[in-house]
Length: 212
Image (tube, rainbow, N blue to C red; front, side, top):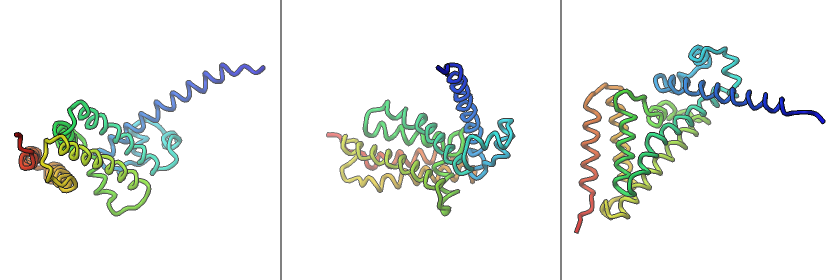
């Protein structure tokens, strides 16, 4: 009988090394994209960043588009850990919704943060059909659905008035964060975050259900 134990161990070790290397490449690509956008990711730039050959980097991904998709998914996981997870510790309704918006603002506009892919990526791929755009759209739609669900839960919990139209509130809140992102990063307005928080607070106050 052929003894495959040593072969299996070797393959397992190689597989683990491959996963570690791929994770390192993706992290480097994510850092590049946070500064230069998804289109700023090139195999050459990435190879230099991780001290590997171009062929070594390319071996882990079938194409540049697949690399970009993997980066979007990695950012989505980071977003989930930074925004979704903390929100789930809050009670359903307005406390959870506030946490989601606050966390999103902080990673999008706050100091020592990278640009939000869901905003920057939308501008970068708004008129560029393809699989990368499709992946971005899926991520953004998941996030918008989570916000919309939280708004509806806030109404059901009696935190917001029953007259609130969930889609309209979603549009208002989303637009404020987009505006803050634009003014803070493009216009470099240091007051953007304060203004955004004030506008969001006013929206909640104006639509808050009256307690009996």
